[in-house]
Length: 141
Image (cartoon, rainbow, N blue to C red):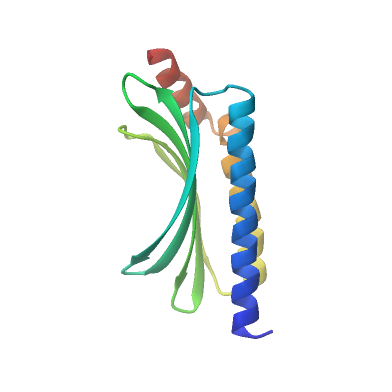
């Protein structure tokens, strides 16, 4: 398979992850888990290479401006693919790196994207530190 074919597979897989995060945001809205839920995406050029980023943000406190965030990045670093994901709360020191790895194999990268998506969409259930911080900030409002 050519490099272009690999690139196409990777971009398509990341697009599917983005759609899954949009669906996750819709779920958060449907169950009224947060007053407001938004999504976004961007692309950046950093010293270490380019990065595509998809994120979901959920308002925790209107008066204090706290938002919970779920974020995944895909990028290139030379001949390697980079995947990272995290959950955080804005304006605080709450930041949990869930996944960060480099891959030369497209198959490994595709598997890592699925794992990272699973970690993000289950963080409120599976990640004690994030769940507790979100609950605390929601009570503070």
